Image 1 (tube, rainbow, N blue to C red):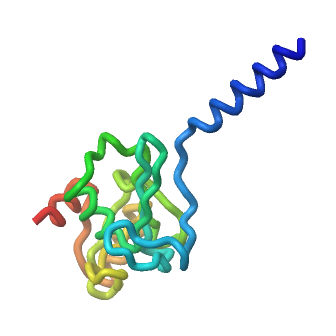
Image 2: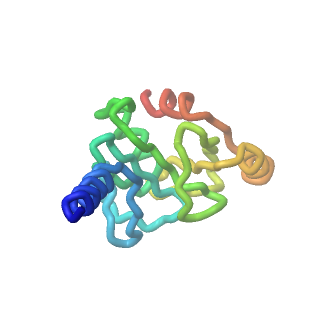
Length: 145
């Protein structure tokens, strides 16, 4: 009986230690994997987590996109997450976000790039702040040039 309980807890420990999850960004402490700036802006931070569980944080979405375009295969990623501009600190799936480039919304690295979970919210910002909307594929293409 004792052996079964021990076996159960060991198996539970192994399963929990193998799970890959997004990492909480420590604003003011974490550094951008791409440009090495301190990550402080909750409206523009981003991260990806590899399938092996290694997390990389970025101070701006453009740093994440540039890093992926230059160095990484998206198929190796378990998570690619960006901050929802309308909910600072909330990370959303990069592939499902709507992106806005607007000179009226400044981002840490100067690309004026923000992400929105809801396309309707991004459209409201277009009406107020001007700019242009992109989806994930369009954004990667824009930054690959």
